Structures are given as structure tokens and as C-alpha cells.
Image 1 (cartoon, helix red, strand yellow):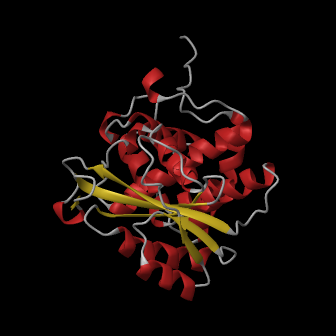
Image 2 (cartoon, rainbow, N blue to C red):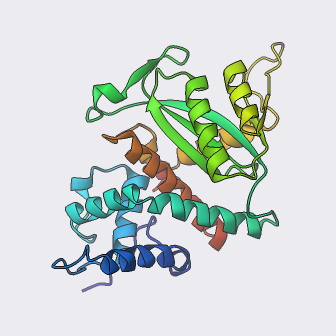
Length: 279
């Protein structure tokens, strides 16, 4: 039988070395707590992670996972546990610190950029978690993200599309202040008005609004803001994020963390990131 070829989304040995310690520590912790009693681990963590990356990159339904991966019920079970236990957010934070160090930056950023993206949802998203973004004429959900000045994810919040940028921004900046106390500066667009600016100031974060020149026609990059807009473009390399397919907003946030884990691990190992259009 011919040797099975890995999928383009599968972890290389170098990328697996970056994420393996966190996943192994999670499994060891569950064993210490007795959560794996009577349920022996039949599948390797690397195979589970490869399957999750495959779903994130290709956007196939969980039930359609190819047979070379573990059963879809097992993969989704691990995905749900890792999302609930914050494993994806932990991995994203670890890789971000490594990327910043490799770029000659301090591990903890002092400045950030905030923006939103509204996307349509699939049929399996509950109506209660959806809304209508009147400005962008999109019915679905809104992704609010905060990145550092390299475009690396610091925080993400998924809400109904009808939630205002300001309301989401208040919640997101509160999280940033709690988890990243070194942040003292943030750049945003004009949607983040007085309430957000005053709330951020109380948290010790100076929010500066970057305005678009009204005389400018067509597309143009804006100072500071282009960084977070580029990150939103990076996320679109993962087809699962072209639309919101998740039943729960928290699972949507996990998919965004997974996309960043994929991107940052490739950046650290010097591997290319082929687009889904060409694979």
C-alpha cells in the first residue's frame, strides 16, 4: 500500500513541536483529575489537531471528515473540550509571544488596533445569535478583534451583527485591559465614539480614532488601521471563516484562534500558507 500523503493543512514536525507541549499538558491534567478513567486515549493528539485544522481550512462539515482522520465525533469532542478549556486561546497567546520575540519585539505589546467584520451565517446558527448590520447590509454575526501592531490576535468577540461596534468595543477593551495590562494605546475607526473612548480611558488605554480623508476616492490604506484590516484578510485564507458556520459564538471565536494558530506556526517555521483557492 502506498504511503499516505499528508494534507496541506497538516502540521509539519516543526509546527507540531510548537503546539505539542500545550496539548500534552492538557491531556496530562485531565488524567490527573481522573477525567479519562474508563476512556483510554485511542487517537494521537497530532491527528486530532490535524483534523481540526483541516476543517478550519476547508470548511467541510465535521461529519464529512476524510477517513484518514479520527472519527468526526472524536475530533469534534476534542474541539469542544479545547474551546471550553481555553486551549486554543492559550496556544494563540503562546505563539504570538514567540512571533513577537522572533521579530525583535517585546513579548507583551503596548499598543493595539481594533476593528470589526460582519459575515453571513449558515443555516445551523440559531436565530437568537444572529442580527442585522444595517451599515454593511449583512444578516449574520459580527467579529470584533483586537490585534497588536504586527497584526497578531490579542482578543476576539463574536456577537450578533446587530450589536453596535461601540457595545462590542467596550466589552473587548475590558478583556484586553484584564489580560494584557501592558496595553496603553489603541487605534480604531470612527465607529468607536465617546462611550468607548471614555471607557478605555478609565481602563488606562488611550483610544485614538483614525479618520478617513473624505476627499479620498476609492480604496486607500489608513495609518495603523491597515494592520487589523490585513489580519481580517489573513483569516479569510481559512474557508471556514468565509461564513459563520458555528452553532455557538464561542465556537466561532475558537475557529478564529485556530486560524491564527495555523498562521503564526507557519510564520515561525518559515512555511508557506497556500490559499484555499489554489488547493
